[in-house]
Length: 272
Image 1: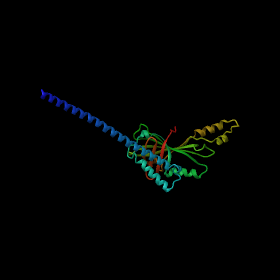
Image 2: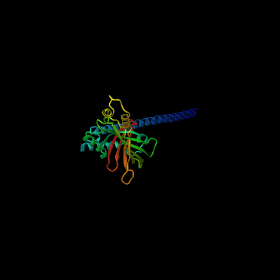
Image 3: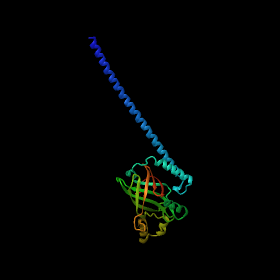
Image 4: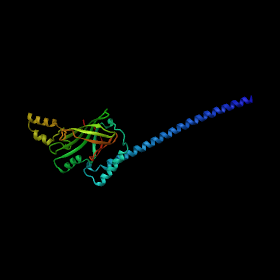
């Protein structure tokens, strides 16, 4: 009887030890998983914080450059370093076309074909350049879409300040690699003419009855739109490569391949 009792006791102790060991293993696994999740969350938060700091430094470095018109060699070097720091965050990731879709406001560029507009506005008293945008139309598309370069400009006293008229350069684009898109320019248009109050008064003075002709002139100017196809001497569409070096919900960085300059954009409200 003592032998049977001892055997039962020994068996019960073994079962208890196994259960206790199993319970301790489960607890240890849960603790290990919790620690791993906490560490991963901490790393993610540190990464996001560093990225936001890099983006802030980039926008700060371009703030007083008049969108790239006034930069010293030292500033250009600092801006390039800040660009590279941000670009390294999602370099090599495929382009999210749903995220790319929408309107982006130009904050800085080193592209000569854009800087010449800023230079003209700075030296010519009869020419103003307002906001510049890139508008991508590519939602729910995986290999391309439409891009519109939108330039707001004006002629003082004839058109409204800064937004007297709009120049739109439209292009089709196709995805040629993970981050490169090929632009095929289609058309240049001048539209959205907003004449100044002075010009309206000259065409149709408020103190006189507005004639049919003067009203027709005002209506024609407001609805005016001129369109010109973009072609080279060989009658082929002009094109070029554009490298989208960084993209998130509120910032877009791009580089025109072949030394065409860099671009810094931030998300803007839809134009239309």
